[in-house]
Structures are given as structure tokens and as C-alpha cells.
Length: 149
Ligand code: DQA
Image 1: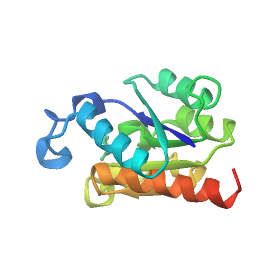
Image 2 (image 1 turned 120 degrees about the vertical axis):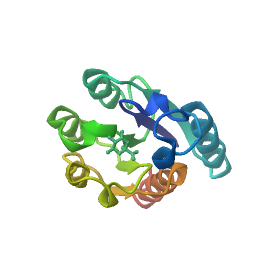
Image 3 (image 1 turned 45 degrees about the vertical axis):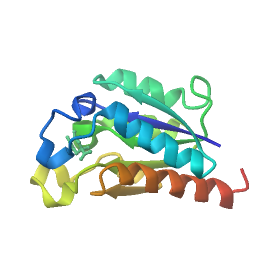
Image 4 (image 1 turned 90 degrees about the vertical axis):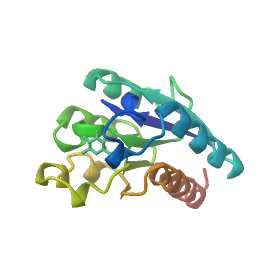
């Protein structure tokens, strides 16, 4: 079982970006931590990051064909709150999807309380830092296990 972990705009700046909100860890360090946790849980991971909406859409389309993955963990950053293109890309691929956020978006500005992606995901996990991604991977493993895949 392999999971594609997609990070959107500005998440390449983790480690130097708004540390009080997003912590000190770089994206590379966070990905390494997630990969190690997943390996311990029998999950292979593949990571993708882009600041561009269209590249994120294309990565979602290619979950199987380009990345050979069975599920998607998606932190679309600010696109979460308004990208209909990313929202429409999700039902194009029949794999489980979990929206994640490092911060608790519901404890922040009003515009972050809205997600135009969540309705096309199996669920949403936010507020647990790197653990949001780990919990999402376990949720996808569980969904795939239940569907016998
Ligand atoms: C974020 C929350 C978004 O509101 C914000 O635009 C981000 C990061 C998070 O992981 O907490 O870029 O998705």
C-alpha cells in the first residue's frame, strides 16, 4: 500500500515560515518523520509539493498512473479555502483522500474555517502538526483494509 502526500503553496517554507504556527521543522524533516512512521505501519509513501494550483491538480490526476499510489493525503495550504479546480480534481480519481492541516484552521481567521475540498475527501484532520499526516495515513490504511484492497 502506497500513499501520495501532497503539500501545496508555502509549505516548502516550513522551518522558516511563521514558526509560532507551523513549528521549526523543515518540509524535508517532516516528510522523513512521516515516511518513517508509515514504514513502521506497513505503508509506503511518496511526496509531492508545489506552489502551483495546476501542478497540484495534475498530481492528483496522476495518483495511480504517475505515483503508483492508492490514496492521497492533501494539505493544499491556502488553496483549501477557495480552489474549485483542486476540489473538482479529487472525484476524478477513485482513491481515498484525507485533507490535512498542520495548524488548527478552526482556531484561526474566518477565511480558514471554510474548505472547498473537504466534501470531496473521506475526512479532515487538522491541528496536530506532522501527526495530522500520520493520522491521515492510518485512516487511509483503514479504509483500504475495509474495502479489501
Ligand atoms: C495550512 C492552513 C492554511 O490555512 C494555510 O493557508 C497554509 C497551511 C496548515 O497546514 O495549517 O498554508 O494548510
